[in-house]
Length: 449
Image 1 (spheres, helix red, strand yellow):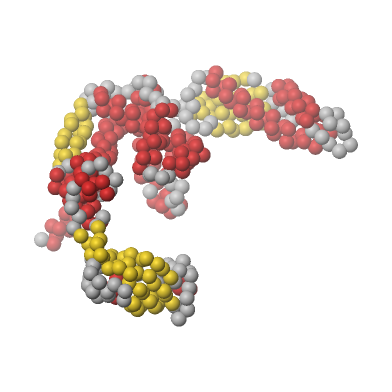
Image 2 (cartoon, one colour):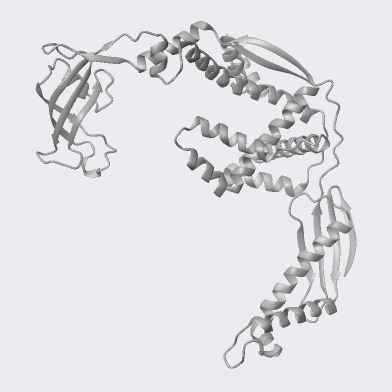
C-alpha cells in the first residue's frame, strides 16, 4: 500500500492511496475460503462448494465487501500515519478499481484547527444573586391558600352562590338519547370558575341541597365522540351537597396539608423555587457574556465539513426558499456555534475537565425528584436512549467548563431584587432592531415633525 500526502490547503488534506492488485487478491482469496467453510449450496456437501462456484454466484458481492474493508483499513492507517486529528467524516474519491486492478483513491480529510487559548485574566462578567422580597413570598402563599380552599357544608335551606362548591349527580341526553359518559356521580364544581362546561355554573346558582335542577349546555367541539361535538345537551342534576369556602388560616397546619413540615419550610421552599427560576435565566445572561468574549478574542479557522454539517442540521426543517433567504445568517450562526464548541472543548481538554458516571447519575436523580411517581419511566428512558444520556453528559461537560472559566475571570457578584431581575431579563430578550431600520424610523419621525 502506498500512502502519499497529495496536497494541503488550510485545514483540508488530500491523501493519495494505492492498494496493489496482489493485496486485493489475497484478501479476496481469504474471504472466499471463509465463505467456503460457511456456505451451503444444493448439490454440494457443507464446506465442499468449489471456490469457482462461490465466485460465480457471489463474486460481485464478495469483491464489494473486500473493497469496503480495505477502504476502512487503509484510510484509518493513512490518517494515523499522517497524524491528522480528524474533524468530521473524511470523504473518499475513487479514482480506479475493479477486479484484476489496483485500488486507487483520494482521501479528503478536514482536521481540527490549532487553538491558542487566550488568558482569562481580562475577561469580565456579572454573576447575579436575586433577593426574593418577603411580600412576593407572602403573595405566593396567599395564592396557594386560594387554590387549596377548605369547603364546609352550608345549612339545608341555604342557596348556592358564586364561589360555593356544588356536589351533584347527573344524567344527560342529546336529542333525548343517552350516550357514553352521559352519567356522573359525585361531580364537584366551584361556581364561577366555569371549568365543567361553558355556562353550566351559572345555572346552578340558587340551587339548594336535594334539589333536582335541569341544566342545558353545549358539549365541546373536541368531544371524544365526534358526532356529539357542539351538541346541545340536557342535564338532570341532583344536588347532593352545597359547601361554602372558609378562609384558610396560613399556619403550620396549612403547610402540613400541602405536605410540608411547617410554615417556615413552606416559605423557604417558595423562596427557593422563585430564586431558581430567576437563577436559570440570569445564569444564561452571565454565560452569554462569557461566550461573547471567548468568540471575540479567538481567531479560528472552521473545518469546512463541520460547517456544512452544522448548517444542514440547523436548516433541516426549513424549506429551500427560507434556506436561501437566511443563508448568510445560518452560516454566521453555524460558524459561531462550531467556533465556541471548539474553544470550550479546548479549555476542557487542556484543564482535564471530565464528567464522571456518578455525576450523570446524580443529574438523573435530580430529574426524578421533580417528577414523583415517574421514577421508573425516567430511568428506563435513559437506559434505552444512549443519545439522551450523551446529551445530558454534554450539558454537564459544558456547565463544568463554564464554571471553570468563571473561577478564572473577574466575576462581579451583584445582588438585585426581583424587579431589577425582571428588567435585566426583559432587556436581554428584546429583539434588536438593525441600525438601518432604526435610521429609517428616525427619518420618518423627523419628516412628520
